Image (cartoon, rainbow, N blue to C red; front, side):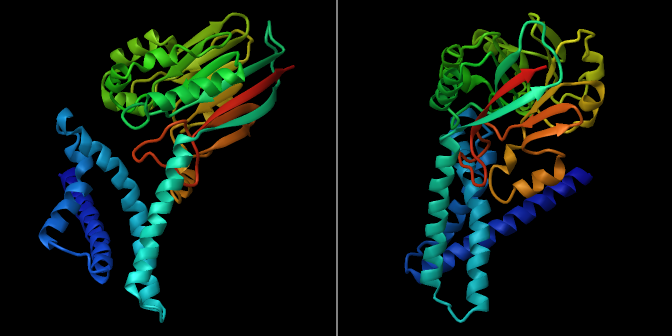
Length: 359
């Protein structure tokens, strides 16, 4: 019963905010003498507002999912701009709705262009660190770390090709894919033949990945793991492997899996550098305490859209970037792809190239 009441309350608040946004847009359309057919206007607005739900009803309604993804951007920034416009109209002597509304709409369009560019034009972040641990056969190691591809309809095959190109240009010794590789269902990965692109990744020791929360949301874990295997990506599920005499690598199940093993139970006795992939950076204390040397996560997207990064910064000890936690090197990536709208404001699609020196 509490969940039902909570759901009703959430939908009511969302519907009210949608009405406020629609009312503000209507004021501008009326001022521009473009407003027609009020019943149709409100009907279309609320269909768009709930299209993310409509799109999940059946595969034939997939277009509504795409509309819903773009709507998330319009909803967040439309509300911010609408409130700013009303504040100016109500608190200043300048009350020309045509001009103020036109500026707000132009800013929304400009933000969408900038956001699309930042989402689809990834950058390479470089980092060099020294690890207080010796590798039996290496003096240094170059790794590529990326997460949160959300491969699907909007984060598509062409975007994956960008990653493969940038990663191969770095000439890494090993590649780590830290969860949310696909966006829920791996069917788009299969249908678009993305495995053929992923197979192009080159490295000395191979490509390894872990599950993220969205792989669990898709509820096709076995199919996903099989597809990754076909793409030459080894998915580690609560297991630790020894990679030659170079390093130990642990891949944790995402915390979405309530039955996942504790990290200390995955520790091996080998005195090699210990790398851990855990999609969500919810606990950095435990790995630092038990001797992890390099800890990698994603999940946060650095908020993806400003000002959401202020929320992720409060939720996680480290929501983005590099940090030393005791003797443990920690990295959280904002992701190579995106979730929801194919846009980023205040963050950018990225992969990390880290040069590690052992001593």
